[in-house]
Length: 211
Image (cartoon, rainbow, N blue to C red; front, side, top):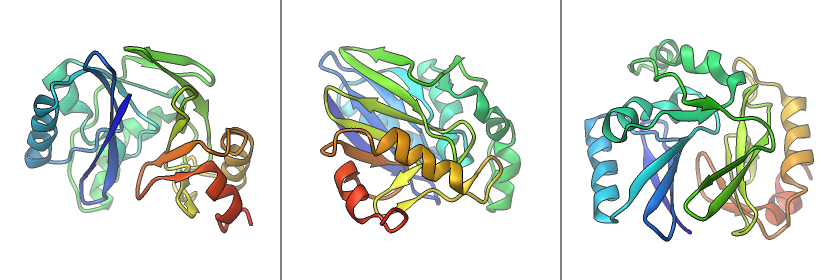
């Protein structure tokens, strides 16, 4: 599987494209904010001969769902996310105003993801790991075969997600990271919702919230 990262919106969210051997691809957290960014995304898909077949959200804060309507209109895909993050999805347009931004409310999901659910596309299997604390419905997507995990805004390189927004809880987030992410193999590569990739081993060893 090939992993591509595109960074979108004034909030600089990481949008990941996971491409299988057939050209089918999954999108995690499409953050395209404006026409220029949606055109950039579409051009990237076409240039790499990819066929989007799956849209996933680690959580439904506005920056992670900016592009959901575009993905529906362009590729006919609705997202899969946690039902526990529905309030964030429904309030995304209101929250955008607080950042001086505008957006339409994202479309309703195709379905809801539960903890430990297996999601498949092409030959790839992703396990959903419920990691609440940044939001109540935060989900990480773990690919055991390739040794990678997409953590959204739960775990960053050298940091953790903020917990002062609705649904956030510091103690819950620390427990989620400790019990759901730090038990993964140390060599697992971490792809966060913002910033650069890291590894489980590095974060166990040097993340200031755990040392």
